[in-house]
Image (tube, rainbow, N blue to C red; front, side, top):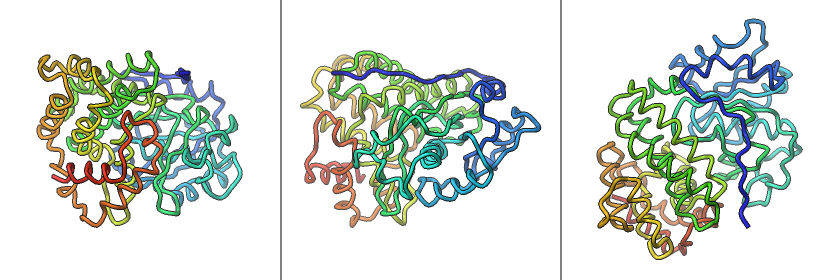
Length: 382
């Protein structure tokens, strides 16, 4: 049985930001909490959003979102939400502010001091109700697609990086204006772009049955493959920015089909204490090894992937696609491996254990053993 739902309101185009005030009125949000980070503030993006809000609208601001959102940050933002009597959230930024906004929207309306009981691995999806505070998501990167997804990833107080997820966590509005991505630096454009690429290819390769998701994933994959390099080389390329924003959105629209071993590995890697590791960049580094590993379970799907990537028929296999992705990583100046990202060898066992317990392990087309996860990590070391 396949669950097929695409249920949220999306405003997508250059200039979409101008619709914000009218959309907030439709949603009945009168006292929003702005959830963002200091990078968005420094880049002047919050100022652009603020210009579109009614001048008399009471606004509360939380700009302390860390690179990988945590339960501690959720509590800090939740305190502001409650003290200021907020009735909704506007998330501005990349995946981190949007994921944190989902955590705040959940805990503002649900019992308990901790998010962990609401995580996928704890069977928490069924505990999340329609009471979640309304969220408007305004992405400033083209990667996570969290603006249209039902999930968010948070580092718990225990140190585990876990996903919360429910249809009720999907933002009520995704306001996607590619104009906001024009100033994104090349390294972030590359890392977030490869995040979108990975979402689309992992969802397509998943064995779950969801033909509409497959079609969307292939379109997103083709867009990401075609435009990520252009957007990285020339951040002012409006056509490239538009298509990368679409690829990111499409990659998240198909999340419900399931991701795979790339994300099962990148989640615990990104949650390691003492490191600052970009999620999309980790995905790019892990992807070639996982593509090769999945070959026995994926079969003919690689022919379709190679076709949309414009590869010759002779490369319509795991090795051909993996080699093409590795070459793209090199052109984008993605780090050559985990070692180049600064990881120590003593993290390998912890990452492998985390991957086995990650929710994405359940949906990968070929489930690795711990020893196979260790091998995938070592192959990605560089």
